[in-house]
Image 1: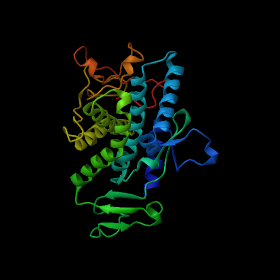
Image 2: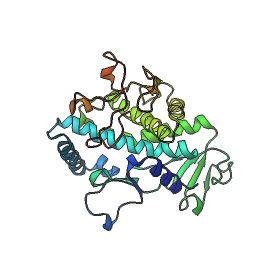
Image 3: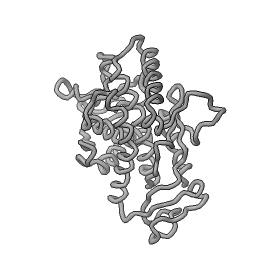
Length: 292
């Protein structure tokens, strides 16, 4: 299965991504911005946040605080980008080298990804070439001449995945931190939450929530710098709810409660002292991504 084929499978399993392969062109119309511009072009970042503010206002009928807008926009980007890195690992044992310029965000929360030209994998990957070669050309079968870096074992690949997510997210966190009004630990907590959430969501979408949670736990069994917390799943109190049997408490807050105080996310840290976590909410008008 080529890298492009893995992404097509991911788009099929996770329609929440609204994913299309390939960088946008003239036929896609205006309004597209890639992750590199968000991280390094202040004007592009402000325009993106203005668009998010308008989308939230259209959904809830009122303006929300600028830091809430920035946090919600960052949450949406991170959930998608983390799944674009972790999804191929879950589905095919590969960690793509996803650059900021490979991720494109468009109007109405559309997402495009330019298929990365390299990835890491394990010995025995059918398209990685000679496992002794380190970097090996995988040819057209691997998605347009993708290069494969063969790593020593499963933990090395997991460490590479964590590093790939941190390398991708770091510049965006630096650009958005003044807008979110959050500290570094809180922002990295959000990255870890969205990394875990995507794997949990993918497992559930494939009909095996427990496997998704197990994969997330293997990846983050506890704090792994810069991620301040592990997956830490636990049984959902009261048995199964909305098809789910597990829950966790987020290391950070996505601030959805500031938009709708009566309908907080089931994994909100504000619920921990108040009541058992409830079912995963669905906010299609406001949230691009699940809040698990």
